[in-house]
Length: 455
Ligand SMILES: Cc1cc2nc3c(=O)[nH]c(=O)nc-3n(C[C@H](O)[C@H](O)[C@H](O)COP(=O)(O)OP(=O)(O)OC[C@H]3O[C@@H](n4cnc5c(N)ncnc54)[C@H](O)[C@@H]3O)c2cc1C
Image 1 (cartoon, helix red, strand yellow):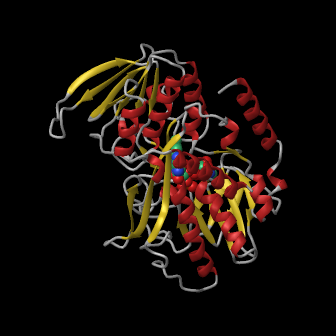
Image 2 (cartoon, helix red, strand yellow):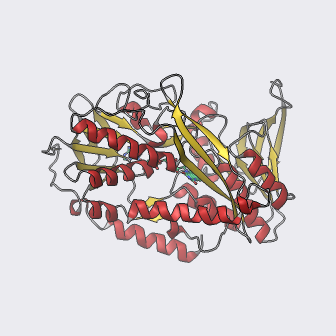
């Protein structure tokens, strides 16, 4: 991040925080008062990310009489998708590229935006309690995303140690300070090792993101003519999202920069000595492994993800990582007829991506509208859905090149949604997975999504 970016971001933050919520909320609140809407069609959406903002807009566009309120704890929107392009130093990408103004779509489509943190969900009274008042709902939509779970991955680390390592080796998977800190560290780096640790085998936000990040950091080093290395310490054995396409690109573009080390498990990080310690296993059957330590200049440690605690807080049924159990093929909670869950927080076997959050919001909105009109919604309608998910990853620069996977979403044999991915070789790729037209499509996808959410 350069100084200009920091100032621009500071300006945007100030601009949003000086506008009081009352400028947007449709009713004035008193202490302990529950904001009740009158239509019997009040939808509260928790989380103003990809899923929540899509849901708010789509509901209002389909039926303006639905009273929609989005409750979001952040005062500005910062996108995670495409953010690796900023780390990689691609042209015409700045921090501002990722920022959205929550008030803009709220005013345009006529929904309320409340900048507050949800602290309690009272399902009996159908009330959401926040740091800025309580809100009654007829339908509640939860789109709170995921959070880091350092405690599960490193049970022997104290909370002080976790705090120190999470700040010094920022994961940068959530928008905000961790990402900005990672960007600063990468910009300041000289020729040392950049160690990237993807989340271990488990569900996490955007499966290709750590490998796209490795590509973009390698690009940064290459464009600087630096001597640094990108070392990926992965629990996987080389099998990961878009693996063939990434490894082909790394071999062609960054043969002396990226070292992928699979079957490893990080055990310790010494942030003062800047060393990372891990066990490397010879194969899947090796349970002993060999302990190794390496020096790093920048360490990007991405821990296991778990579902946002909001889902458990609501008291609906979840799996052991807190993701919501779903009612068949729908995006309704299995437990509560008045709660829908969309985006990363669901247990359907579909990729945790911004695109599926948008898809799930669109799908759930149809069911919500049917429910509010006492109609029956067929949860199998439109399935299988081809290219319901598309995920594009930048891999190179000068010329800019990217790779792509699409997923078809369908029903599985157990009454849930599942997906099947296809990594494409584009026509202009000369038999390679990456191409310039895919890079163009990556920029267009991101610009289109931001346009859809914010204008
Ligand atoms: C580096 C990176 C690159 C990515 N690239 C892509 C990509 O190219 N394509 C793609 O499709 N996806 C991509 N993703 C994934 C995408 O960002 C997520 O899958 C998507 O954001 C999920 O949407 P969501 O609505 O479920 O959650 P989110 O977008 O995470 O939104 C959740 C919101 O809920 C709010 N919230 C949580 N708790 C509370 C509370 N208690 N009170 C109030 N508000 C609360 C949060 O502040 C947040 O704004 C990428 C992710 C990363 C990290």
